[in-house]
Image (cartoon, rainbow, N blue to C red; front, side):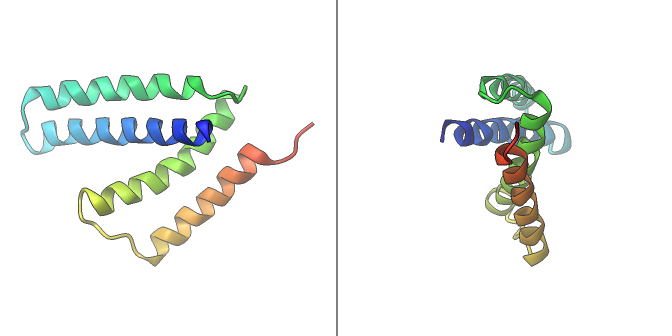
Length: 107
């Protein structure tokens, strides 16, 4: 459960940080949107190091699949861009890949 919460926290930090920087540059929001977004992106770089998995590559590969799901949800809830059936099929495939990467029996 801790691992899943860390993946979600990392995803929200990355997406939230990127979104704030996007708003600052694309929508001419105040400079502090960019500063806050940058701080969240730094936090995103730290959170995955709290995972108990020993392999950097596996953690980031698994995180990539979770990020895809979070990005679709963010787009749906924040940007009001409803994912279609192909988005959900792709996300399900990614989560299947995450499961294999994290929990496949290894020696």
